[in-house]
Image 1 (tube, protein in one colour):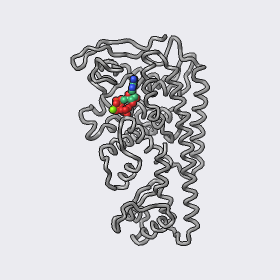
Image 2 (cartoon, rainbow, N blue to C red):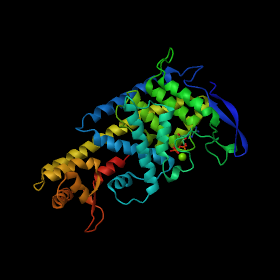
Image 3 (cartoon, rainbow, N blue to C red):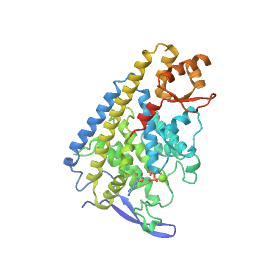
Image 4 (cartoon, rainbow, N blue to C red):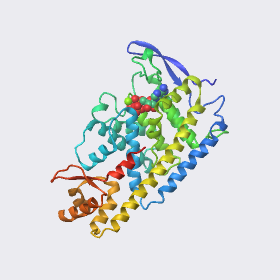
Length: 385
Ligand SMILES: Nc1ncnc2c1ncn2[C@@H]1O[C@H](COP(=O)(O)OP(=O)(O)OP(=O)(O)O)[C@@H](O)[C@H]1O
Ligand SMILES: [Mg+2]
């Protein structure tokens, strides 16, 4: 078996424990066996290329991205235990009252963190993919009530552990805090090193290794899973595997959460990098296929509803314009329609009525005043993983 790392004595809560310090990437002696990933890597790359291609079929990718990014934000937060739903998120954005305020905040924090990373990477003068950028993202992710006391934006200064009630019976004790900066510097080097020796690893395989190593280092007091999964999305873009974040890999990781954690552990305990990489590549292929199918289903729904609108005698310009806005405004009030269409209240009301009579949108409150509407079929399709 390969050596996977070393152990260092560390103390926490007055207990002394053996903390695990992983070797720098890539796995060596022996190197990753190409036959273990070549096929699966090709399939996963193909699935990503197809996904990018399908996105090209729709007239605007804005609404695809709008929904895909929110889905990933939601699912990655659900792995952590957040209870918010996609409808909660849309309600919050429409300014409606939501129940799970804290949970929704956690999801919107992820969205802010993701946007920060994306804009920095796309800006030629922005930060590169680096520890500094991940810390900035972490600050946004843990902003607010829940992050209090979790040192948002900072690498941990104390020993942490995973699983178990105390460090002594933990499943896993990550490296001592004083080792974290150097381990992350190694990881940064691995990401940016274009010369990977005689056997260059494909970018998806490197992405799998980076996520694994990040989780093993566990550099923050909380939010390691979410920042580590954000790192996956960032790398897919950085390495040109998926030019736009259309995939929500967290759906797969959530569905296979037990195996996800077990595979991470098995690298440390058994040197099974191949098993983790295979699991990850399978996840990418599956998630990309799911996203592709979902895009086709949504595009079909929109085409069907658009056809019925075009055939409706009462439909006018405002109802057409409203319909085209729905994918990025699936929950709304009449007043929001009035503002977006820069029109009068009666015109906005009439536009909504056309869509309501066609059964495209439904009213939610049952009240006479302050009515709010939902494009429910669309939200239902988005919510299906
Ligand atoms: N045995 C393990 N070895 C290494 N990493 C693990 C192990 N088990 C879980 N992890 C990683 O640690 C993450 C949990 O860490 P943490 O609570 O800091 O992150 P989070 O973002 O708050 O929560 P979550 O990841 O549950 O969403 C998991 O999502 C997973 O990525
Ligand atoms: Mg957590």
